[in-house]
Length: 194
Image (tube, rainbow, N blue to C red; front, top):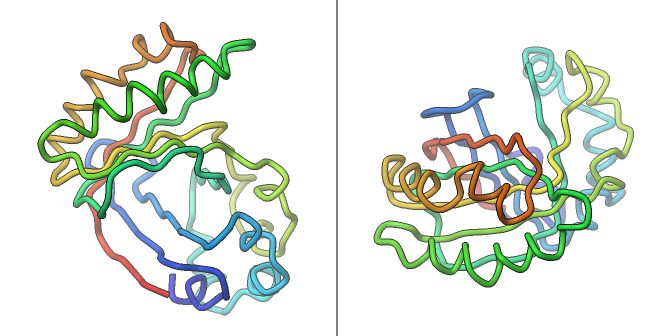
């Protein structure tokens, strides 16, 4: 995390540990712009991993790495727990699903006591698939999430309940998501500020 956060344009890195999720860890980096994740400085860092990074990455399993554009970000602050919902829109339903999430679902979930923030992030495939030496260290290519909804709150029980009641897979499907949305629930472990 300190290596990444030392790259110009990085703002913050967060590490979470699974409460009810796979994989075991969820890492999230916030940057000034999406372009930071394809910048020469960042690509240089990924093409020259330190010995510690090489050792750690060789142990990663079932990685899901996705560079995302933040479509909507509501609320303020960082919660002690976060839910990640990986989903994708059904063909022809992208705009309807996005509109429902941004205008209805996320604002409503944010009104719940204990919920501090909610975000919709959409994958940028070109940025995600930039070829680097670090990718060769991993056990297999990273999975890429099409969209990710993040819900942050004071604790895992509050965040988990909110997602089960407002963003369950069947609810998402009825609003235009493809079947198979995957929800993970994580507790905050560590934050590094740039």
